[in-house]
Image (cartoon, rainbow, N blue to C red):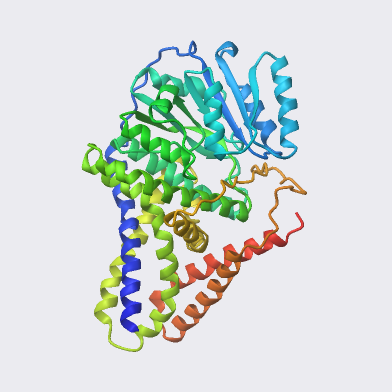
Length: 483
């Protein structure tokens, strides 16, 4: 039994180690390409027709803000078409209809597009909109975004290169300082948007359209086979199909599109489950095409890491489970060599910390205040292992599930949260009970480590305990709240 625990734990940490060390690779490329700028011409493309698609589904609190912001974008009205792709089943429908009617009277070419069913979810709505779209370029914004007025003039200038198929902007956070939950999310997303997306793009690797805050060349979408609804990550799927067809993407790290982060943990769990499962589904679908393609090996390897990174969650969960018996195993025999080798794995933690440190220093003047949240982020990542491991397993088993939207509550830094929220989820999911049990289990690990004076094991035991405790207790608090 001791050997089973030791081997299983080694395999888990080795896989986490391999993915964790990728942070050092990203930092290497970050320093190598930090002075590289995308080619941009000052040619005026405002004579091009642009369609802005706004896929919405039950966005009662934010749909008006979204449409108002889009209508304020600085672009000739006669060259701008706005599609509100509304699959809603609640009051959002009437609110949207009234706003659209008002905008039409003001001279905007804006349409309220309704479908008979929600078939294909977001991908289905975008594909339906494509049938009606007039634009040569297609911009997309989710309901929680507030695009800047110069968005089109800034992004369209990069399409003077006929090989460019998509331009993606960096997400900025409207409520990044709203709570500990949004602060941790902001740190995580900054790592993706400031380092990963930017580095991959400059180094010539594949990147992904992030589902919103970007512009596509219509020809690129059509050439890549249009939107597919067979994964929960339709944006990632289309991105890879387009780049495999030879289209080039441009990522703008220094131009942002403000957006709202999930302010409730149940909403965040929904989002993380969809993103994680969608990545696994896309990896299964796309990786065979990647490896059969004629692209360079270095791009294939980076694409593989990119598409499979969410496989870490089941191994995070396994490591949490094995941490407790490992303490007893270590004190039941002579395993000095084993644990001496295992100490190398701490490099993965250092790699991750360095990765997020660089992302904060790049864009935040107050980066010191932000990076101290790294332990909270790490604990949260561990606490989400139950939720995201289920997503990984379902993705691997090809279990189909509904595209569950991430509820938006119009929470902005310095503003009061919406009260009496209609989208508040009061259901206690079975996963919450598992998370609570894991928290109690990890507490046993902490007590065991103290008893055996295993001081080196305590930091990770505490991270697991606080992670599962925070996620489970916050989930219960939100479910039982009268808000």
